[in-house]
Length: 396
Image 1 (cartoon, one colour):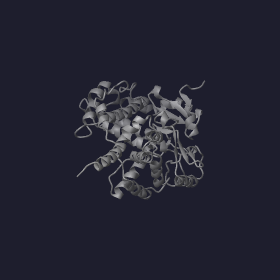
Image 2: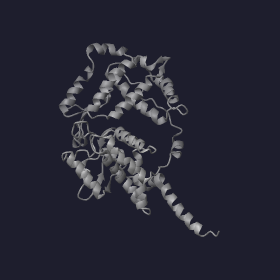
Image 3: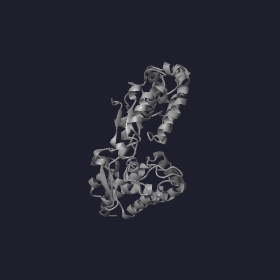
Image 4: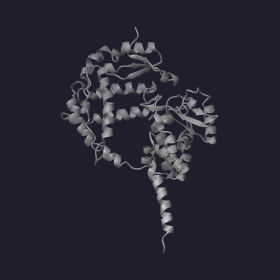
């Protein structure tokens, strides 16, 4: 009889990833991926032996510090399995360590027995402390608390696997509405336009910070010439590069660290023309990678002394290289997403009377989003033209 907890995922198979998904959430675990059905099924039947019999009897008295010692190698192995990225692991462990520094009934969280924790502890003590912590003046944001809650849920699910407890006290707990969300949206800073000379100077310095893998200069130039979101670019396969017609098709994106046939919105599926020099550079990259399969990633993560791994590059790596280049160039630091903003500014200059064209190239859900994010640039230009016309009418 087939194991109902195991599913075959064609999208992962097409992207040369482990395609058999074992869903252990009913046992308090996570999804885990395997090369074959047999491997997944064998793991399923041994899941109750995560630790040896001696540990199973002792684990019910573990503290959270002890649980974290077991959790770290468990999660780290998921990186090599391609289930999570390095930066996700670092962020998750960091968030959990922050939680373990709070107190529960006047005792350090990390020293508390896992089996003693209740939802009341979490809601009335832990998250109140977390909310007040962080930034000295404003505390932690609602979004940051949601991220911590997500990571803590995974951690407590692991506690069930290790037989430290039989339930997850955080399940069903709500953080409450964020009353400041609408206000924060209104105060959201408008996209800043970066001068072309600054962008070119920073990008020219990128090659000196990376030895292995695709040239960071090419990676960044591709970003400013296509406007792809970081998740779309990191998930881009070679079959979406049309060398003959000089077009890149956007169909995939990175979601929760796995590549899916799903972009941010249905309008994000689009085609973007490529400059001839970019096509030439991409073809050279393809040749340098040993003419990989069309299913392979264009910009994979590369380890020292190895060929392309076909694993998505860590976003933290791209961001880190960019920040170092900004510092070296002596300019104010900007984010990777600002490269997408730069593409938008160039397109608005190219198509000043066709904002619908820009909306399509950006992959926005509708023209309203383009106007909201970048309309002030058009308004600034139109206002300058009008001011000039008005000035001509003035008699001095």
